[in-house]
Length: 404
Ligand code: SF4
Image (cartoon, helix red, strand yellow):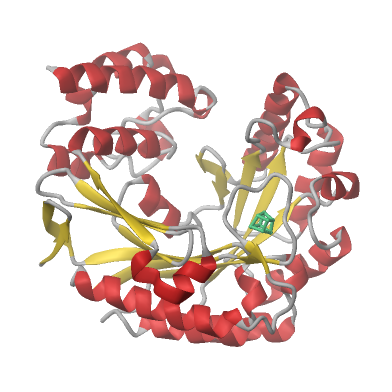
């Protein structure tokens, strides 16, 4: 079954009737100095905009689901910002409204939370409302690093929050950590990881800090070599503890990968709702697509969301590059069957020289144990450390191919 949408002059005619949904909650209690995500300060959980914002999100999602004739929502990710600032009752209203838009149960619903927003009542209501994954923003327990980046909350609150998550979402909570923070050393990062492991999360993300040029933290973060060594130390500790690196920054116990994020890395369709959110729908028939991006302006979204987004038509070459870019972040590589379906060409016909040149850094099917795929093109863990150079080679080859 296919839905039909029209993207400006380029009609999209062949899209699956299922997609994921990203909902952006652009509110934070204070800004962290390294952060590039769009958010505004909401000083308390009674902020007058919250109810109106949820109404707008639900109307937005309903409209997009209807326009695309979607009959199934595969996964939902409520990110931000700090979604937990909304409180459990509002999150519950949001989740049940979204669930009512599809005909089948949603396979995974994730909510990002900050540890200081957590308590028994919050987590109990989240679990009852159908939220299946909680993603906790820890970043570090090391107080000098937390203070240097203006991270809200204390390391004690973080520990208490993790303890609660381990009780209410014992096999399905995720923790975000960062490497390369100011005042971080191998010792403090190792202590962060050991502390997190104590709570046995199912999934851990370890993000290497990247800063926009001119960010005030530039002068106090570890130098490039030290930052790379920190990430490798963290990666190796997580792998040794049984967390498989299944994406550049993501590690999971067996069977605990994030379904929603895998869909991004494999360029499955998703719609984005909320100020600052964006969604991408790809036509399997032509390999072209449409991206809808909301302005990072919560007031504009609340007043007139139809006037606050831009539509971008994505041509075949752009989408081939994005598929390669996203797919090679993932330890299983791009979805080869979907690549062929959309672009009418095998991946190895598209970037043969790059694949040959990087052969020594490619994952082998033997790593898939008893269930090896017939064919896979993916970088090995060591290859992932050089992802940008790989992509540079691949994009050069794609550009040359598209000029022929
Ligand atoms: S709480 Fe999260 S979204 Fe908000 S400023 Fe900090 S890192 Fe960014």
